[in-house]
Length: 111
Image (cartoon, rainbow, N blue to C red; front, side, top):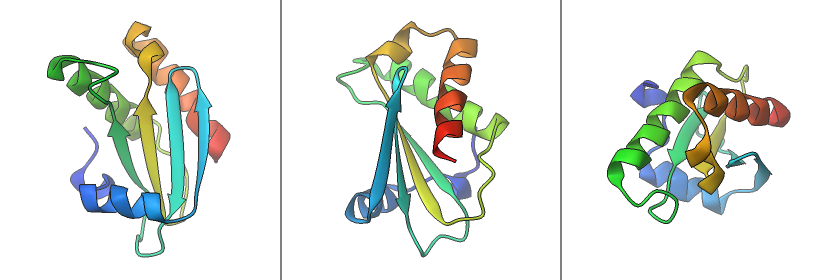
């Protein structure tokens, strides 16, 4: 699991929506990048809505996979960004390996 100091809090996520941002979508994910000057490092949030996964077990599994993927393959960035990863319905069909590969491919596009 990604360390707490590298994850966005609820307050940070709402702040990211207020700032200028860029969004990229592909293969079961939508990634939003917001520049947040108060940060000293890049922070992440993985968001899985109830509409996508109705049970908490599935939402938590997708969230854990997302944080594991980010921890295993971090984005080399010295900028102060907030990165929000939204899982979409197609992400439910992925195996763990496919999930990691699809997310990494999308995150490489934004760097």
